[in-house]
Length: 259
Length: 288
Image 1 (cartoon, rainbow over the protein chains, first blue to last red):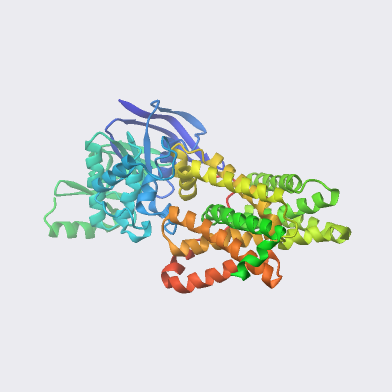
Image 2 (image 1 turned 60 degrees about the vertical axis):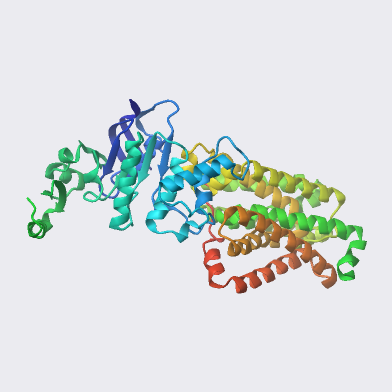
């Protein structure tokens, strides 16, 4: 079942196109990673999906009543803002109850979401007092409290360590298993994108789409990043390397028994 | 104790005390949003802009609240229009429009000496001109502001913290921005007589900054700032009577003293918390 469809969408800022003629369909249960270099239009694509950017061309269809959750880049968050984890999560509940304080049901719901994301018991902490992974989970919790059918994440693993990146990826995979459609943008080809079931490559226009095995090819990567790149295989996983680093990468991988 | 009760024997002072306490609470409440959104400069600017309207109203014998209010709203709209059209930046627009309006008021002061007394009161604050009607106006605005904050608490918080996500989560952020601007303008207008245009910006900023040093929670900051504002208004008025100094100045000085105490007591933790408040940042009036 289709949740959302972009048909020939073009977006521009101050007359300069940043996303050109993009076609994209997101269905229920999809798990898609959008990759591309800086300035390739990844965030604009998310914003077009969210409806915060009006396309100058093409059209966007959303299933009526579609609930979308959005997790922004953590770099955009004001970490000095006086808000506890509980308050940050609850603020997304803006419909229904109008009283400032939460109902018992809302308290239970926030506690349940925090527990599920592994940050139960941190509700009273200020958002700055958390680790990078915990901070990311707070904003994921805020998005999930809206009970979305489609979850959009802008660079959810930027600035976090390898362990946290791994945890976030597994958390998103679990949510996807439960039926939530997930679309994320990432710079991380090897750590994130190569592990997703579906990828979209973007460099102002869509340069490739499909499974990692279909998309992670030297041809598509060069069109996307504008530089020659090679793809190696290690333990059944694809690894993208800069052509200039190919010799070093091969040496390193052969030492660990790659093909 | 008589030090506290002696001023209350005078009706004008009782009115002034009520207005100052409510004005402090009102500015403390609205100031939380003003400081967290980096709107302190527009608070400062609007109070100066309204001065031009106050001067003109006094000169032609027009109702103070109506005249200064319309002037203030016109200034706010002009700033928004100039900024939206990107003619100049928002901080420059605030600087030009509001200081021009203030200068207009000063020019009137120079040309028509007979309005000097009311203009002085508008600049520095005075309890002498506070009437029963003023008490009702400030009470009405305070109750209305508290009601708006109560009714739109979650939406205002979401819009203040994360306007982009609030927008995609179904919050009409443009409406929340407009509501806040309206509250700010009306609050400045209502409290101008006691606090004075020059010092009003301080009482919009000091209570929330002190509250921020004391807590990391938005809800606690909101009621703490309101309480601190009310305390500054009350204590400042009592001191104003005994020291024979303008009400606006003493209210601000009480706030500044409280700031110094809390700053010293909370130490590095309080300083770290308050450092996040960029109270001089010019607002993005063009909309987020």
